[in-house]
Amino acid sequence: MIDRRSFLRVSALAGAAAVTGAASGAASGGAFAAAGPRPADWSALGRGLDGKLIRPGEASYDNARRVFNSAFDSARPAGVAYCKTAADVSECLAFARRYGVPVTSRSGGHSYAGWSTGSGLVIDVSPMSGVSYASGHATVGAGARLVDVYAKLAAHGVSIPAGSCPTVGVAGLTLGGGIGVVSRRYGLTCDVLESLKVVTADGKVLTCSPTSHPDLYWASRGGGGGNFGVATSFTFRTHRTRSVTLFFLHWPWAKAAAVLKAWQAWAPAAPDAMWSNCHLGHDPSLDVMVGGLYLGGKTACENLLQKLVDRVGSSPSTRYVAPSAYDHAMMVEAGCASTSVAQCHRPGTLPGQNPSGKLVRDSFSAKSHFAYKPLSSAGIKALVAQVAAPGRHIVMLDALGGAVGRVRPDATAFPHRKALFGVQYFSHFSGAAAWARAAHAAMRPHFGDHAYVNYVDPELKNWRQQYYGANAARLAQVKAAYDPHRLFRLPQGV
Image (tube, rainbow, N blue to C red; front, side):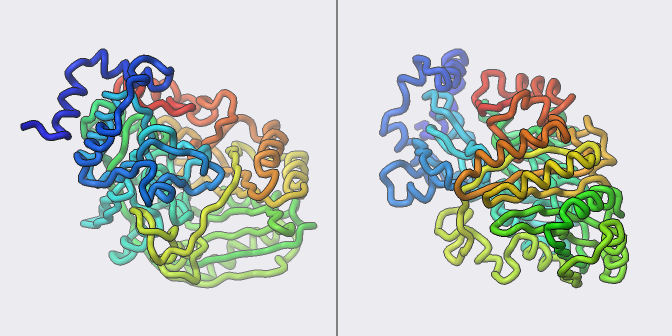
């Protein structure tokens, strides 16, 4: 007897033209999409999974369908499959091909455009969240949240360079590049990626590395999630951890222009051990803050910070500089300094959540730039004016350079190696989208057209060039090789 999983695989391969036509029909309203799966077909899919399929009408559906940004709460997928294994992912893709169901992959659910969900089948890899370590290498399931990655690796005295948002999934972060807290010393997350497992559109489970499917490995290091397949696990090179120094310096708003001018000259050229960001905020009051982390002792950190203060020309109004254990520093950067790891999650009982979780979702709008040269006086004035506009919003500048800049722009799919810093325009509450749009437009003459695919922006024009630069053509070739019939069809898909 052929079980449901085997049946889906065999039928998916039985007629290539029919199967691949179904994927196209799903996007264009073709005949295969119209046929669609029946309730019995969905039930059979659920029985064939080691994980769990959640459908509309079930008690946990409303929780399962929601992503981090509540602005996308209107999305109602036909099913959310919590996949425990790569075989589960293969079965879901076979189902999508057979019935012409649009398919979306989801790790942490943080897509800025809401592309972690959709109207069809959401493949959620949260159950694949294991973190193991051996001999300098960490194997991390694609559904692992960053807070758990940091905590579990800390038990071995190691870590990987990654971001600060605790509930971001490691898959989306890595596949888009992975700008993070220690990137200037250890590189982007994708720079320490040694291999990964990917389920491609045809259901094959591939191990990708410099010697096995090297083109797909290359594309998976900055080409963006949801383009080439569904990643199920990653193997990273780790670094040993040590005590660090955290710092937060605040200046009055009248010094905003002076701080910004000083920071952009100081931060990208600082020693690799120094990572910092500059926040210009209006949430609710106006504030200027330079914060960050130094991979070393307090005295050396103070000496470096004094060089910034000297450039500003005035001392900060408040100053916090203190040593910290590495794992605690990651919790501080996550905004979870006063919570446990368990509490630093969304509350709930589904995979990726925690019953003790205290983090709440947000509704926001965001856009990005990369700065390839320092802002002129006019550019600084324009940015300060945008932040001072009415509303609740913030502009976050993250220093690059160091190890990030020593990698060739074509060595990985992430092209922005020569950028001095990244820029994120972030706003919530009323008028968020309008402010982000206006601020981005106002700064375009100063920053040019460079954007971060992990802050995906559906309003971008010429997005291929902005996300990928000269790497776009090679990414298109990889897409044609591994997903020739475009089963994975993001609105800004490669």
